[in-house]
Length: 159
Image (tube, rainbow, N blue to C red; front, side, top):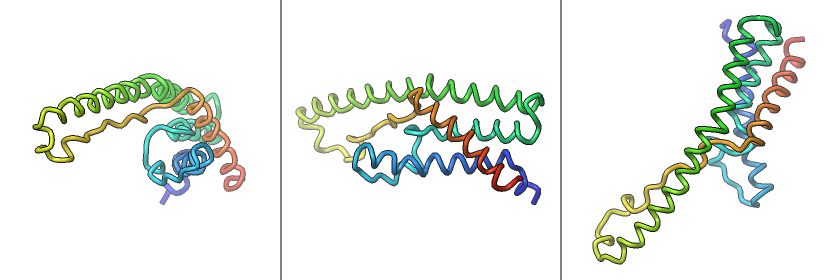
């Protein structure tokens, strides 16, 4: 039951859930469309990855201090995670967009060839996930979300 008293872990998990949930109203404000699938999706505003790792690092800093080795580990982990979210994962999402367009174009071509209607519907519409990574602003606000949420939780429950 000591796990229930691990503040950095709880702050990090709370940041993930908060960041995933808040994507729904943010998307609604921007698009006027309600999309509950965003709760379980990757990408979007704010970055739950960034919220999680910054909440973790903030929790570790509050528990062990900024001069601790464990804070150094969590800070480097956060930097790598946030860098990856704006780099490799974002570019993979951009490539998925191009590949999906190529599949659409190819499907149109095959449709004209009389063989296409005989194929199963699921074979015609395979799409890659395009929203994999984050824009730098999404990572920034995800990080800010994690820090502020960890500080608020620490104030509410640890003092």
